[in-house]
Each structure stands twice: as structure tokens, then as C-alpha cells.
Length: 406
Image 1 (cartoon, rainbow, N blue to C red):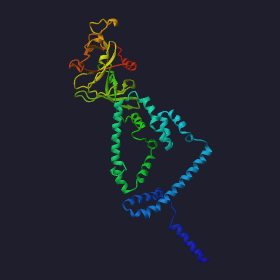
Image 2 (cartoon, rainbow, N blue to C red):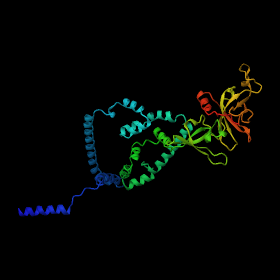
Image 3 (cartoon, helix red, strand yellow):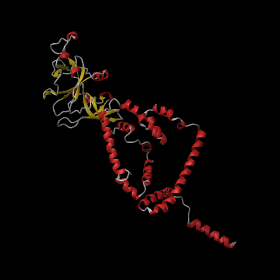
Image 4 (cartoon, rainbow, N blue to C red):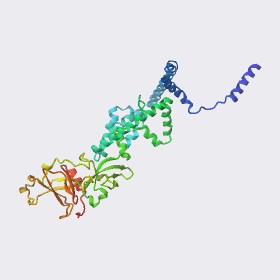
């Protein structure tokens, strides 16, 4: 008995003071997973180690995963019994009908719930309606092309540095050879926990070429898109009833836009802030502001038709679109019953926002041989667009000046 007592007592003292029980550091639970991925990458360099070490470790991981999944399913079934049916139990058609009625902010919140709802809430068919409703009036073909060019550039840069495909991604390819990718994933997750907003954004990060990515870039002001601005430079008298091309950026704090106009001659690009929504439109044609628009409506022009025409101060300036109407010839008294102005090759264009007698009041063009016409004193008139729709006409007329311009 004495021998047993001495032996047990010495063992207790050794265990108590020589091997103190301390809690394991937080990284200890990850070492088994890291070692698994380490030998997986190690087997690439040394194939003979794959059959000896990797195959021994892999069944344990599979068994742990299966046991975790079974425990998770049991927990979910218990929660469903206690709490009743959840949103995820609805049929896909019913769930999509609910998501279609949510505003963009609601869809973003739902996307943070789980992976299944994330895939549904970030789908293009849900965001297409929101895109048309909010941005469809000012986003044209030129803006779409600009966005496609931007995402193509992002993809090219991302694939070059971070892709894990064979032969691509210099940075990720090099780092993966040094240590398993799980280290970088875990590090990113720890950094995200410091900020709840960043955590929410990263959990619902959409594809770069999706509609929701374009919507987010527009709302946050990260995407400068081409459009046209009525009465540029805060309605300066020299640009009354005109519409000029510009690159726009949205400011969510003021619900207005910042406009960046192309440079005029030797002058630098002009910048205007506080541009409201009602002063914007998508470019009606794909013609560059530095190119002459090909007029395809000259034979259809008749008196009292509403038109917009290109005009620029000199050859170095870009074109702007100006509003006007087709007038009668001097030999015509304006009587519709006896008017033959539409049969003449000469077309009179009137700009009634200017006083009678002003050099800007009217001009004439040739219906058959119209190209760019004008001089350095009065400017140069370019292509013509006939306005067929009442919406376009009313948009121009809402900017009609309170007083006739000199």
C-alpha cells in the first residue's frame, strides 16, 4: 500500500506542476486542417508522398465532414419543428415572387442571410427591372459599352495576378506553392470581422459582370458613364436650350451628378457639380461629339417640325445639340393650304428662344447637299435629328427660358 501511495502521489505532483493544463491557443484547432492542405500541396512536388501520407489523412477529413453535416441536418430539423416553416421552405416560384417585390436595399439584406438566398437575390432577372426603373432613362449604348470595357479590364487584371488556373495568376500561383490557400482565406475572414459593414458587403459580393455590380458601381459613384446634359454650366445663357455630351458620376449624398465635359480647344475639361436628374438623358445617337452626324430625315422636314441640330463654335470644339423648329420660306405667308416649303431644297431652321433680328434666330440649309455649314463668326451647323416623339419635345420645352434671349 505504501508503494502504491508513493507512486500515485509522485504522479499527481508531476502532473500538477510539471505538466500544467492550459487552454489551447485559437490557432491550434486549425493546425489539423492546415496540415492536411500542406501535404496535399506537398504531394504535387513529391508524388511518392501522395500514397503514403495524403491517403491516410483524407479519410479523416471526409469522416469529420460527414459527421458535421449530419449534426447540422439534425439541428436544422429540430429548429424547423420548434419554429415552424421558414422562408426557405417555400417553392422557388413563390420565393421569387416575394423577392421581385423587394426594393434594392431589401434584396441586399436578404442576400446576406445565406448562400442560397444570395444566389437568388443577386440574379440578373431580379435586378434588370430595378436597373431600368432607376437608370434606364440616362444609360444608353455608349454607357453599356463603357461598362463592358471596364469589367473586361478588371477581369484581365484579376486573372493575371490572382487566378489559380494553370499557367495564369503569377501571385496566387507563387503563394499557393509556399503555403495552402486556406491561410489567406482565414486571414481575410479575420480582417472582415473587424467591420460589420465590410463583412456584409463581402458576404454578398456579386460577379463583376452582373447587373447588380453595375447598379452598385453607379450608386456608389465608382463608374463614370457617358450621357448628355441639358443647359450645361448651370444654365448659362450661352448654352440655353442645348444638350452636350459629358462623363457623369453620381453623388448619393446630394442625389445629383458631377459632369465632366470634354475640353474645348486649348481649354481644359470643364467640371460642373449639382446636376439634377431632369437635366440628363441618354445619347439618342451613337455619334461622337467630335463627328458629324449623318442626317437621314432631310427629305421629311416640313414647317413646324421639331428638330435638334449639331452646332459648335469652331472646328476645335465638340458638337452640342440645339433645339429648333422648321420654319417657312420668306416667299411663303405661312398658310398651310398654299404652303410648298416642303418641296423646296432650302430648309429654314428657326431658334425662337432668341429675339427677332438676332443672328442666332434662324439659318438655312440645303436639303440635298447638307453637310457642315457655317463660319468662324456664326459657328458651324452639323447633322439634324427630327423629333418624332412627344416625350422628346416636352423634355426640350421644359427648359424654355423665362425671357427671350438677345
